[in-house]
Every structure is written in C-alpha cells, then in structure tokens.
Picture 1 (cartoon, rainbow, N blue to C red):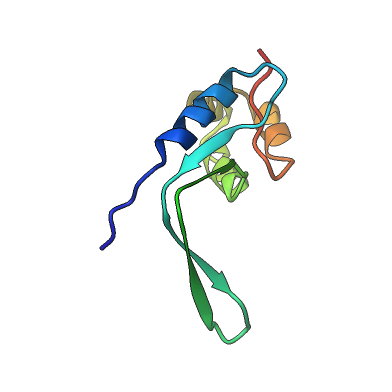
Picture 2: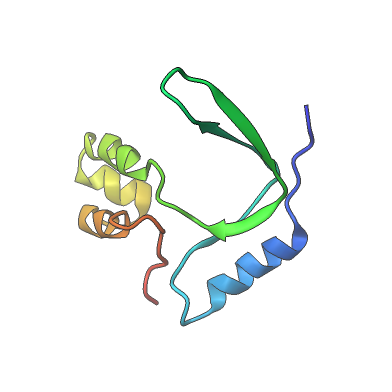
Length: 102
C-alpha cells in the first residue's frame, strides 16, 4: 500500500483560488494515486499512476447523489447541500462545479 500525499503548494493555490473574486471555479488539491481507464468492451483496462495534482472539481456523479437525497424530500436537499434543489441542479448542469456568488 502506497502512502498518499498532497502537495502543500497545490493546497495553498487551491485556498488562494477560493479567495479570488473573478474566478468562480472550485479547485481541489488531489493526492497522488492511480486512475483506471476502461478502454474496451471486454473489460480490459489499464492503470495510470499520477503525482499529486491540482485540478478543477468536476460534477462527477453528483447528479445521482442529488437524486437520492431528493427522494427524502426538499428539506433534506436544503439540509444536505445548504441550498435548494434548483440551485443544485443549476450548479450540476455543467461539468465543472462553480462557487456560489458572494
């Protein structure tokens, strides 16, 4: 088992990016790890190791999570995400997560 690390420079840059008024993208400092690529129908895949990196946060499978939370009612959406259903749907309509307007 490999020790996962996050670059202190990437963490600092992510925190600075949060404070920039003109940038609305959410950034994340990610640890080193392995990305698995599925490349054919038979299920053969290969793994790509990667160093610690900084990247924009993508919406990934958040729409599925939102749907599951929505099944418990609108108050649960507000309690879980801190905002309403329409605001969450608007945020997840793009592949990159955006910061709320301040």
